[in-house]
Image 1 (cartoon, rainbow, N blue to C red):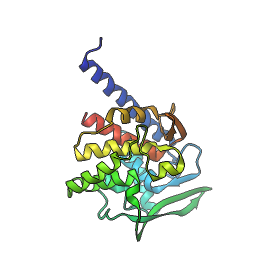
Image 2: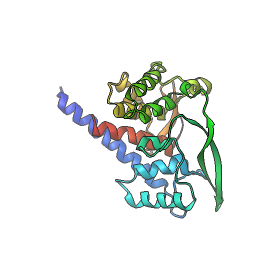
Image 3: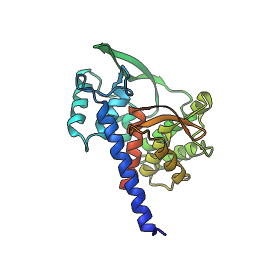
Length: 247
């Protein structure tokens, strides 16, 4: 019988291998001409925010050369902030209250569409019905307003139905979003709280990694639905890295 310490070591190695495969997935998508990653393999759409902003962060250690080139491309296209996803890295100066966001085309280059998400001045109504926004709010307030952060976190936990976070989006789409599993693990790390359903969330997150190394966007009946894309992969990598740093 394997000892507890050996089991823990094996689990950490499995996570480390998943991280390496995920980073390779991102690296293999890099478009040398644009200095960016497409939304998914063979896609002609390139998202500055969130995809490439996240990729620049997640590749900073393993491929600093690519990370720098991505950041340079963001600057070149004139889009260096969004206002929401930066919460994960403490780079959103005024993340709350949440504002409505607009998806827009930046330009078309060589038949490839460059897009991004931009913040508007309108308040975002009904955001507390979405697990991802509750978790982002908890992360944003983890240091400044811990009691409020915990309230948002608990509201997200209440949406767990045993398979995933069944929020308004899941009810509408009929599938669970993989990236919300990742945000949950990131939030528990930032808030330094015990995580109900932690092992189940980790298991489900790990099972959504594709044979190529990226993470598949959604799942239903415990089976992957959709394609592996950059955003879901980056958030999954960030979550797994927190598990290695703070097991």
